[in-house]
Length: 28
Image 1 (cartoon, one colour):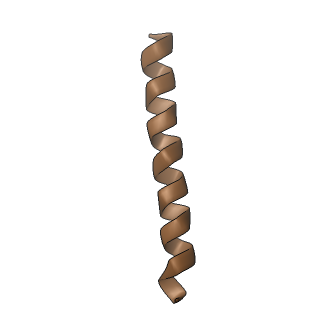
Image 2: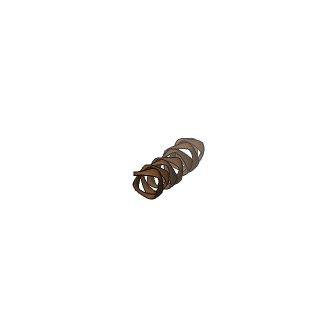
Image 3: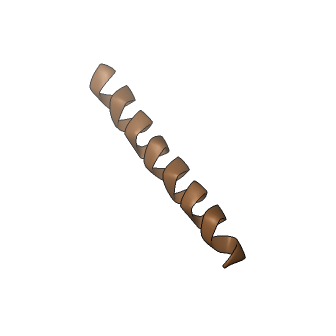
């Protein structure tokens, strides 16, 4: 269960990355 929290953080960072890319596309 040690990697569970790391997996969640990586998943959250991935979602934030996708959202930021979509925002850049919308602004551009």
